[in-house]
Length: 244
Ligand SMILES: [Zn+2]
Image (cartoon, rainbow, N blue to C red; front, side, top):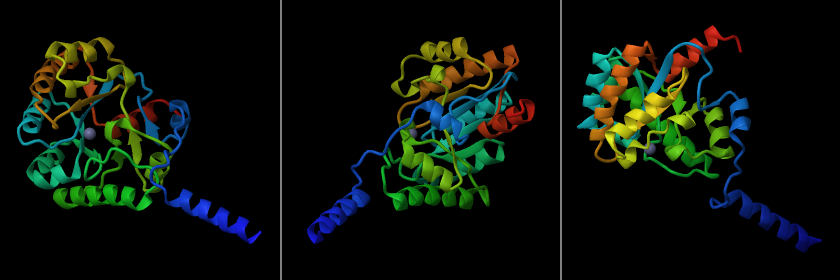
C-alpha cells in the first residue's frame, strides 16, 4: 500500500510540473461560448476592426499611423512588450491618436502550457510597460502569438482579466509572407463583412506590401461606408445594438 501511494504521488508530481504536457484544446464554438474568446463580432453595422501584430516598428508603424489618420480610421495594435520598450514614442503616438493598444506578450512567447507564473509575468510585464509609457492606459485585450490557444491560455487570460482576440478566419491576410500587395487587398476587400477582425503585421520583417495594401483597403472602406474602429469599440457597439 505504501509503495502504491508513493507511486501515485510521484505521478501527480510529474503531471503538475511537466511543461511539455500539451494543454487540451476545445473547439472554437466551445471557446466562443465563454464570451472571452473572440474571432468575429456579431453586428449589422458596417464596421470592421483592423489589427496589427508584432510592432511597434520604427519604419512601418509611423507609415501605417499616417494612413489611418488620413482616413480617420482607428485600429488595434497587438504590440510586443520588448518592442514597445524600444520604441516608446510610437506607442505614445498610437495612444494619442485614439488607437487601441493590446497585449501580445512581452517576449513574443509562442507556447504556454502549464506555467502560470510565466504566463502572468509575460502579460503583466507587458501591461505595466504600456501603462508606464502611456501614463496610465491599461490594456484589456490579448492576442496569443500565432493565434495558438489552449485551455490553459484561455483560463489564465480570463483569470487575469483579459479578453482573447483572434481574427476572422475569412480575413487572414498572411501579409507576413509578403504574398503580393494585390493579394492582400483582394483578400480583405472581397471577404469583408460587418464585424470582421482583420489581421495585419506592422513588424517582424519588411512590411511594404502591408502599407501599400492598407492604403487601398482604407480607400475601399471610405467609399463603401465602412467604419474602421478599435476592437473594444466594436465589441461595445455590437453589444449596444444587438441585445445579447
Ligand atoms: Zn506575433
